[in-house]
Length: 146
Image 1 (cartoon, one colour):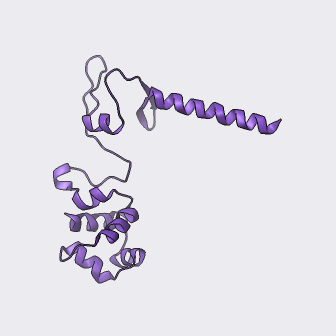
Image 2 (spheres, one colour):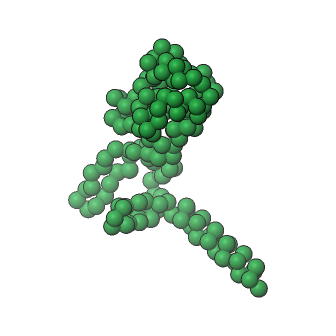
Image 3 (cartoon, helix red, strand yellow):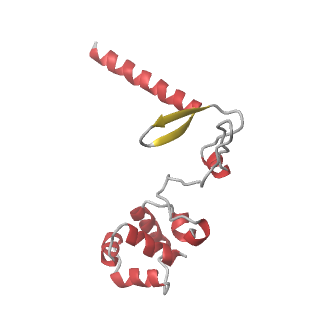
């Protein structure tokens, strides 16, 4: 699995094996052997590769595009699949999304929209935290200006 992931990530980033080798301090032959499945990188090289490609170590090592149906996503970016909109506009947020974003029954979500980019959901407590920080920053600026 890791060999396939290494090759796909390198190609998607438009790196040559030489580019990868230079960036993490190994030979081009080592990168070729990893991608061919002849050897596997040690843990320190895996960490460097995950950082280079901006993916989690877990995804670098275990992700299966064939099983998941999608390529490895950048760290912090998620694709949870598709949901159907019910007759009254309701959707069911996938379990993985609810777990990652700590969304529970009864939580309030702000629905934001951009006609060019789509719809986003934001938990009310995160929005309130953001608004508080804006007011704190404004007060600091006002005090400095006096």
